[in-house]
Amino acid sequence: MTRPSVGINLSFCVKRWVTPALWAPLVRDELGLDLVQLTFDLVDPLWPDAVLDGAADDIRAMTDRHGITVHSAFVGLAHYSFNQLLHPDPRLREVAEHWLARAYRFAARAGIPRVGGPLGAVAARPDGHEPDAIPDPDYRDLVARMHRLAEVASGAGLTELLVEPTPLRREWPWTVEQAVRMAEDLAGAALPWRYCVDWGHGTYEPLYGPGRAAMEPWFEGLGHRIGAVHLQQTDYQLDRHWDLTRPGRVDPRAALALQRRAGLSDVPVFLEVFYPFEQDDASVLDAVRRSALILREAAA
Image (cartoon, rainbow, N blue to C red; front, side, top):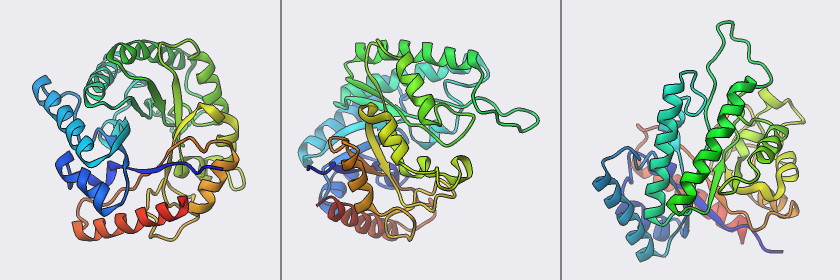
């Protein structure tokens, strides 16, 4: 049985290796990888057109030169910090929709066929209570926006859009059942919407409970609706995004084996790790290099 292809999300490059002239040779020569997922923490879709087009052309040229495939571009931490398509102010939902349309335009020019990430978050209630579902009007508005965004992405030339479920009750979806419902409500969209599931999200015990926080339900429940997987080291207690040199509860070899058994050998796996900005660059590079080796050996 074939093994999933492995790559890396460029989150570790933020504020460090910020141009493709820097990160492309690093990924290929230092990490021994040829598959990446771009983060929009490195490119702002709201840059002026000329700057954005130049950045897209640079990515296309440098990845071609170094034999790297950019599978997808994800929204990144900066944009994720906003409430995006579920902001309580409709004007800011419009801004988020415009931001994504710009992201699609950039990705198409850069030769990146997919864009994805978390969708947004409703505001917290004054009493701090977090219900089991977001309000139905917010959900229906979100689905309508996703249908419009699929039309925009299709017009830009993309092939697929991805949703990353997160372990927060104020975001959507955070359960397998919610994800299945959303997929059904998006049937017939101009482009397919699929999921990027994350090992630190599906295993978050404070939300799902010990014994129920696991990736098996996501793999089995979503199946072919999964288009990518994020791998990180974590302790199941927070969304850690540790690299693979750290001790934790994720065994990369076992994780890839589980994915194969679920019939998802064709779904790529991306190491997604974050580091404090104040950490020195040499130690970051060493940890990422060793983590990439661990992941490559797990996939061998």
